[in-house]
Image 1: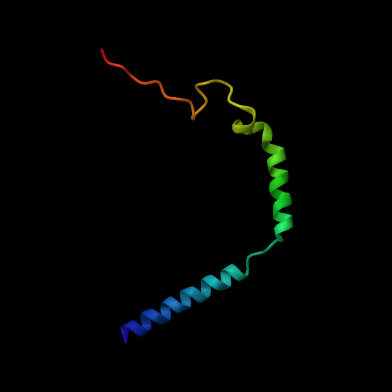
Image 2: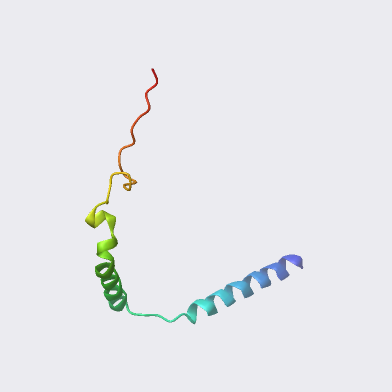
Length: 70
């Protein structure tokens, strides 16, 4: 009996999640692509991979210097 109750509760949770997902406002892929392109063009001056880093210390991809003990 407990197994049936647990299964029923699980199914109700799934149903509620599906209802929440169905209520989400959707946009077309073409609109999403246009929004992404607009965002990229507006923020390209802030993109370090496009314009570079202001100094070597600001570059998280720089080669780390190795520590040598004498």
